[in-house]
Image 1 (cartoon, rainbow, N blue to C red):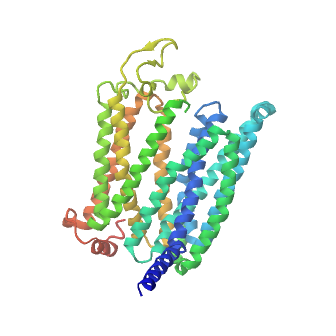
Image 2 (spheres, rainbow, N blue to C red; image 1 turned 45 degrees about the horizontal axis):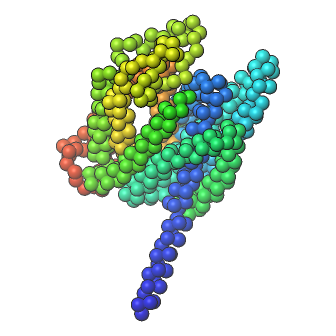
Image 3 (tube, rainbow, N blue to C red; image 1 turned 135 degrees about the vertical axis):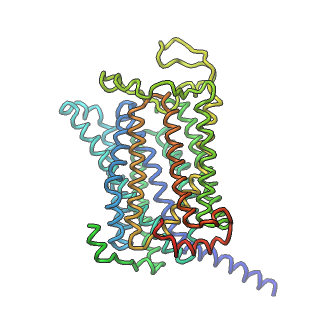
Length: 486
């Protein structure tokens, strides 16, 4: 009898595991893992490729960033509207194919350019090579637009349908998706970086193209299986007729340090996803956003303090636009170093930027200031990702099904508008010393955003804002009375 019970228990355990591995939720996780792995590899590699192609200059990378940000800013709402007006499976499969085919084609062009750059440079006074640069940036931008459509339809729509009416399940799925994002953000750049380091850029391009070809086929199949296992995905609320009518670096040691810091920020991001699920169960969704916002701002205060620390390289007395005339009017080349001065990465002595190569400065390293800056940025990721998940779930729960695409498309456009401003500010104020001013501006923008959220939370919960009550009851009340507020 005991042996039979053990066999039954083992059979039940194996059956549960098999059921989970074939469930729509797990298949969606697997598809998202393949997608984000390819995205992270490509986003990391394309910037490195553009720097190498243009003689270790950041010009092409900056142009690519501006084009990407501007395109999503202009087309984000249109992409979201297209997601709303078409069948879910068609949208997911079309965006998946366009994204991966664009990356494959772009990888092949990059391989040809790396192999024949000298020949292309002599053809038609270099215009053939320039045309290749334009083609690479254009196709890479198309891939990013398709990736935006994929993110909207999967992360903002499919997940809601797969979770059904279970908001706790929806919160867990959102947190798991973010953990996958953070893990791939650590591992994918490391993997492709090793390939490029021990191989060559050509091998890196070939590997990414091959990966995207394989990944596209697997993701296509996985999305089809999720669609088959979730009949609700086939039913999509149609827009009303009236609504439809109205809506017609090149420093090795610095790079190593920054890669470690990126990994640390991704780890704290994963901690933020864990904190989100715990806080939501204890305090409710709206209060979770408030608490995570306070946590983020508290950590960012360290960044503000770092600007005013004695010996800080972030000198507010230096005009951020001091070198604009010499850089753009007189035609001096732009520096390929960004963000923090060289003093950060030299242990005892460093070469002053404005002096002769042989002159060595004994100025002490501002290790306390720099440590506070990075510690604040990395620690703030916990609050940042918890707040991001809160806003994501608020939109998922409160935006009607027929408008999820366009609302999230507009949100992406607004995100990229500020990203566009970021690129413009760095181009206009490239001095490393000006980073202190950019820190203060950035923290101010974050503070304004959390003040707006506090107003929303106060309108939603009123006098109960600082009282942790029943989370499920709170969310239910929000859906009934505050849809328009979100």
